[in-house]
Length: 157
Image 1 (tube, rainbow, N blue to C red):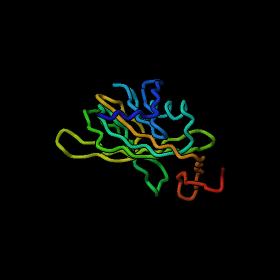
Image 2 (cartoon, rainbow, N blue to C red):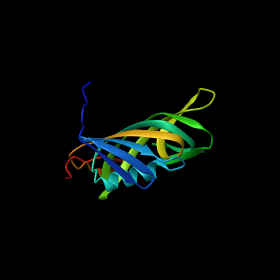
Image 3 (cartoon, rainbow, N blue to C red):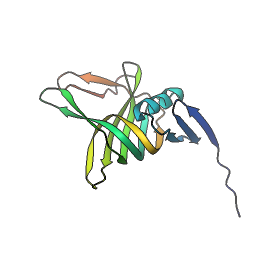
Image 4 (cartoon, rainbow, N blue to C red):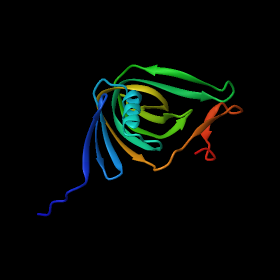
């Protein structure tokens, strides 16, 4: 039997634990914790400036946002029920020199229908497992006033 020894490091923070293997992080968020707060704490503690986040799990409360291009405002709606996080995908960038998570989520209900949208936050109820893939660069977003959203600004470093 061959044993493979990986260059792994275990980490811990506010409502999360993680393992870093090479340049990839595997993150677990504690039960009853907020996804956005925990992942933001993780990103700040690891000094990740840019990257990708993917994950799944379960939540019992989620607030989704939907952007209305006519009003240039988000419409928020909170769902308080047990939900399966069938997919969470997003990115890490900077806005005004602060790390920002841009996350979208698909949630399964107990009747097998789905909810989807921009994630404002969700409370974990059960497991929450994420992979974070950092990019060795600083990616900045700036507000496009005409559209009302933040866009990548590759001229800023």
